[in-house]
Image (cartoon, rainbow, N blue to C red; front, side, top):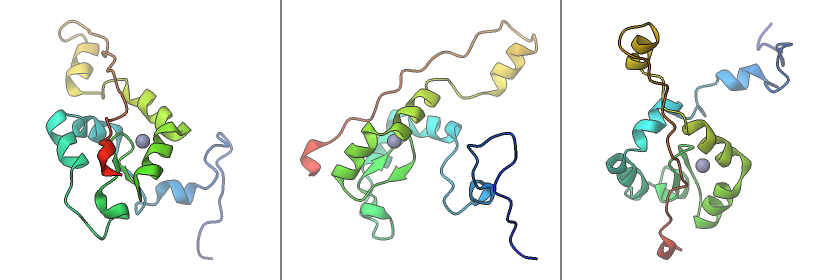
Length: 129
Ligand SMILES: [Zn+2]
């Protein structure tokens, strides 16, 4: 015995390798964490980080919505055009689930449907090239 060889779970063919989905090393942030990051002050900090040589691209090219670093401006721009990024923006349009929402749904207070959030790709500092 050793590592699990299970590659699927019958229900979804999207999860090709379940061991990969549960690995924590490459795990990116959860959507609600990203919603916190999207607050202007936090976002500014994340987008203008100090040089960090341990991080891809010295932490200079960060996609806020995917919580990922890229090697250079070109890679970041290519990423903005990619499917994963657009999908992520779509996911982020919905407000994160909150305790307040749970209470409203449970009949405490009036229910207000989660409001759609306008999510745009972060502006780029073109002079960073
Ligand atoms: Zn992205």
